[in-house]
Length: 324
Image (cartoon, rainbow, N blue to C red; front, side):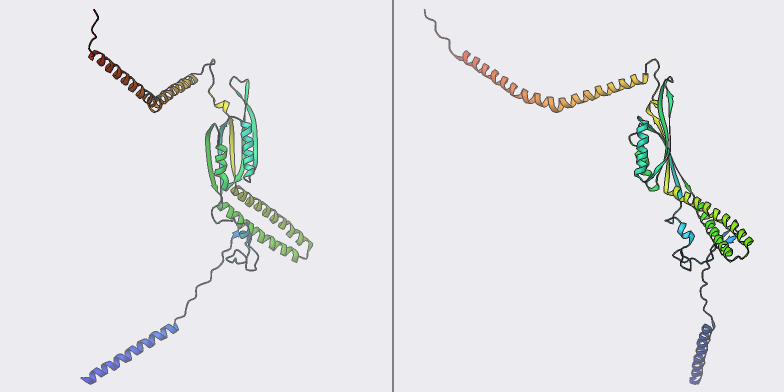
C-alpha cells in the first residue's frame, strides 16, 4: 500500500514538471508582436495631379527636415470651427447723419473699418419735404460683435428688425489648404526640373507650367486670406431710418391718436395728483391738524370749565338785603 502511494506521488511530480517545461518552451517560441508604426497620411490634389509634400509631419507641425509645413502655417490659430458671422438691423433715429458718424467712430475704435456708406433723401408727407436715410456696412472683430450691436441699438427711437447669421466655412478652408500644399509641392518639383534642364525648349515648357502653378497658388492664398479675414472681422449692415418717416400722417391737421394720448396723459396726471393729495393728507395734513387741534380743544374745555365754575359760585352766594 505504501509502495502504491509512493508511485502515485512520483508520477504526479513528473507530470507537473513536464507541464511547466511545456509552458516555458511555448512562451519562448511565441514571438512578441510590436505595434505597427503610424503611416502619415498624404493629401492628393486631383486637379494638380501631384502629391502633397512627401515629408512626414511631426507632432509640432514641422516637417522631418525641420521646416514648418504650409498647412500648419496657414491653419487658424484655434482648433475650433471657422465661422463667418454677419448681422443686419434697421434702426430708427432722430438724427441720421449723427448716428452714421457714431457708427463709423465705433467701428474704428474697436479695430474695425468702414466697408461702404450710402446716404440718400426720400420724399415725406405730401412730397415737398425730404428726409435722409442711410445704409452703412462696417466690420468689427468677431469677439466684439455683441458689444457693437449693443452700441448701435443704444439711444434709438426703435429697432425695426435685427438678423444674425453664421456660415461655417471650415470644410472649404481645409480644402483650400490641401490644394495649396499640393500646388506648392508641384512648384518645387517644376523648379527643380527647370534647374536641371539643359535644352532651351525644355526650360521654356517647364517655365510656362511653373507660371500657371504659381498663379494658382496666388489665387488659393487669396481665397484662404479672405476666409480668415471674414471670420476674424464680422460684417454689420445697418439701415438708418429717419424718425419722421415712421410717424403717422396728419389728415387736415387732426390726429385722433394724439388727442387720445393727451386725454390718457391727463387722466394719469389726475390720478397721480389725487393719490399724492391722499398721501399728504394722511401723512402731513392730519398730523398737523391734530397737533394744532389738541391744545385748542384743551383750552376751550378749560375756559368752559372756568365759566361753569363761576356761574355756580354766583348762584351759591346769598342775595344782599335792600335798604329801605
